[in-house]
Amino acid sequence: MKEWGGRLITAPHRIFCSLTGLCSAIYLAHDPDGNAVPVKAPSPASGLYIQTRGGELTKVAIPPDCLAFQTGETLEIATAGRLRATPHCVRVGAGPGTENVSRETFALFMQPNTSQVISEKETFGSFSKKVFSEHYEGTGM
Image (cartoon, rainbow, N blue to C red; front, top):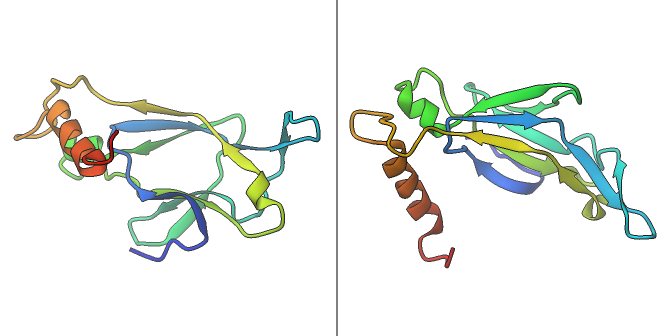
């Protein structure tokens, strides 16, 4: 895997659900009265990045009037690898004021019922338990 670099808002990861719907991100800062106001991205490098099958990092720009979808680990398992989960992260480019700007978006995570068989050995429920224990065991969550 290539070096992700930059200040990361999210660590590089793959979503464990089947499919994620994504809308365009907006950036917010606070005016002197404390109200959140839309602003431009704090840096051209800020945003969602995916890793291609060739290992390259690519910045994704979702137009404001569009939705994007990315595949998750459950879909990768259910299709025996024909569709692959998308490694991704969110980066913030360097620059003055970047620490005062938030990136906001909406993600819709879609997954099957917990009893749905996703491979010869696994249901979505058993896969979910495995993922949760790997990520959260011993964290108090």
